[in-house]
Amino acid sequence: MDAPGIDLRVLHERRQRLLETELGVSFQQKADTLRVYGAAHVLPLAEKMIRFVLHSGGRLEDAELRHYLAQLRRDPDMQPDVFFEASIPVTRQGRVVRARGSGQLAYLAALRKNAVVFGVGIAGTGKTYMAAAWALHSLLRGAVSRIILVRPVVEAGESLGFLPGDLSEKIDPYLRPLQDALMDILGQDEYPALFENRVIELSPLAYMRGRTLNNAVVILDEAQNTTIAQMKMFLTRIGKNAQAIITGDVTQIDLPHRSQSGLVHALSILRGIDDLEFVFFSEADIVRHPLVRKIIAAYENDAGAAR
Image (cartoon, rainbow, N blue to C red; front, side, top):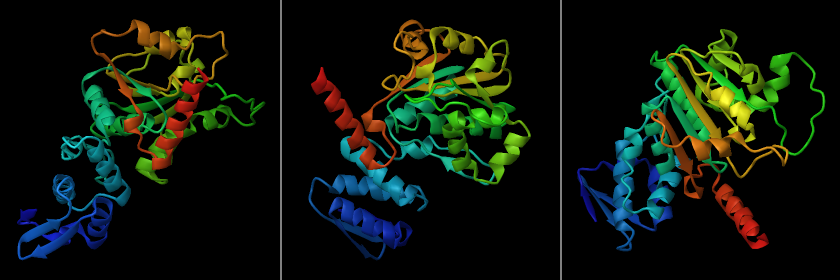
């Protein structure tokens, strides 16, 4: 395959070796033409990935490159450039977050046009991270003035007992996944300043009752652990110029057995409402360590065998 006009230096030596190893191809640069040698069935994938790397300006990390390559292998008709078109700025220093996979693309599309968005699916699909990124994007462009992080205080199969400290210290362990996402995007220096200035607010779900939330992106994480009454209460807090993002995994419900999940109930009654959308993530959307996909598949296979 010849790809005229491509400067191999833009690919960088490390990325060149990575693509050669992952795809089983070899590159050769002559003048302004890049030649790619390999099996016929991988050459179209190689061409797409080369153009994708060039489009990125060489900014892709190795982990991202491997992830997009895995996506392309699963769906050879995919056009990787759509992930750059879906990039969102999240800091004033120019950092952007890109969708990884079709699930996250659909998630961002839903967030752009709806006041209430549910992100529902298995662990590791980026539901919480992308919600945090969208909230920061909304804050950066002045669409809202604050971010509110909410989570039901439900323990995952074990009792932690009495937790010392003030309210913030008590709920910190429960809200840590949301804070981790924001700190990963903002860095250790910028996040505390936003928190101290109450631009970012943490709240257990129980403290939402009676409030009206205006000019904010409100993220409810681990929504599978809400009761029906709690979910109704949360959804009716939405005020002017506010957006609610609800994330959850219905395979990891930690409520007492007799309690019905508010997320499961919402899935059954809220579909078809204008300005509200559900986005569903699958195993193909997992963006954590590649081992996570195998672990989840093993548990699902075991559950299926047990039935």
